Image (cartoon, rainbow, N blue to C red; front, side, top):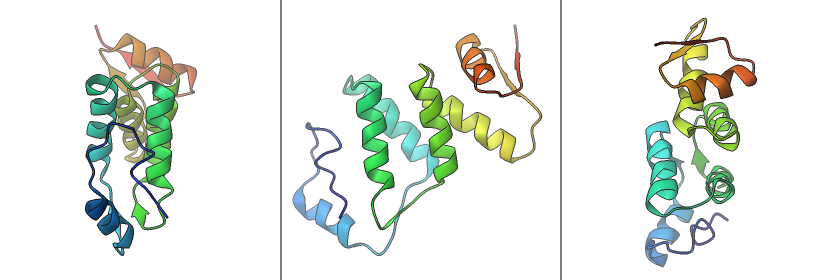
Length: 124
C-alpha cells in the first residue's frame, strides 16, 4: 500500500488524507502536478535529486496511481543527469507529438538531452 510518509520527512499530510488516497479507486497525477512537486521539493525543501527521484518512484508504485509513466521516466532521466525534470518531459512529449528536434535557449538542457540521444538545436 502506498504511503506519503516516506516521501519526505517534513510532510504535512494528515493520516486521514493519506488514508483517503490509499482507499481511492484511482489517484490521477497529471504531469504539471509532478513538475510542481519536483520544483517544490528541490527549491522549497532543498531535497537532493536522489530524494526527489525516490519520492516520485514511491508515488508511481502506488497501486491506485496513474500517470504518464514514460514521460515521468524521461523527466527523471534528465533530472538524474543534472538537468531539469520538466525539460525531460517537454522533450519526451515533443517527440511523442512528432517533433524532429528539441529546441531551447537552455544550453544545459541541450547538452544533457543531446548526450541522451535526442536531436537538439540551441537557439541564441
